[in-house]
Amino acid sequence: FFLICPLKRALNIMLRSFALISLVGTCAAFGAAPVARTRVATRAAPQMAATLESMPGKYAKGGVFDPLGLGDKGDLIWLREAELKHGRIAMLAVVGYAAVDQGLVFPGAQFAGVSSLDAHDLMVKAGIMQQLFFAVAFFEVLDAFRLLTARQDGSWPADYTPGDFQLDPFKMANDKYRLAEIKNGRLAMFAISGILTQSALTGHGFPYTA
Image 1 (cartoon, rainbow, N blue to C red):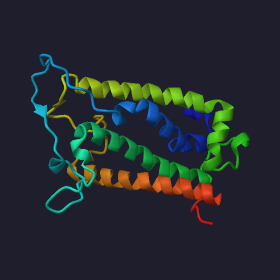
Image 2 (image 1 turned 30 degrees about the horizontal axis):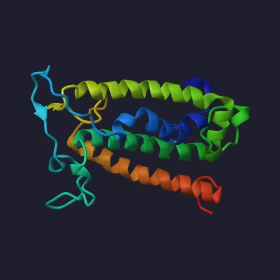
Image 3 (image 1 turned 30 degrees about the vertical axis):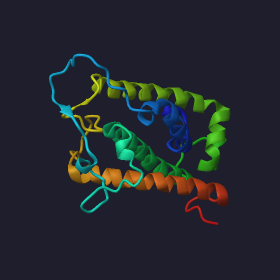
Image 4 (image 1 turned 90 degrees about the vertical axis):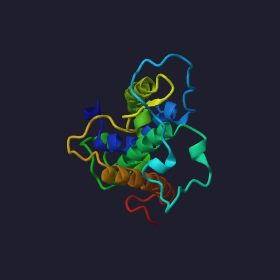
């Protein structure tokens, strides 16, 4: 699919289209955690009872920084899945948005010289955004099914790791890099918000200053 799109549009999608899809495809992640069902458990594995103290990314000495009490208002594993997913999307969005404005695009006269800010509207007019919407929504439905299946008896297996797709070719799945991913994902979510705001206000490309 992406071979038919200029890189400008493909990368810019990581910002706008994924933000839109997140509201649809990841509604499971943002919505209320599934209500536990009363039935005989089908798995013999022990269950996970996550706490804020046991999760990476607390940002506190001798305690937990949670002034709004969000940790007591939902399923922590479910919330961490949402945080990781949107952090990953934001990291891709920051790189993609800046790269397109720096000229890293596929050949194509109809999109030559188009900025990341303008690429969204052009994709909608060309009908490509709709294709992307359904392609991404398909994978989001699969991921939602993965989450619901893992929590089918109302709790998480003891060996369940949020955001783990069993894809680690570089052997980086350790505590150091998991914490780094959370920190950089949080920073990227703030960063892409600022980049979008500056890009729209100034009308200039990278580094988005007047």
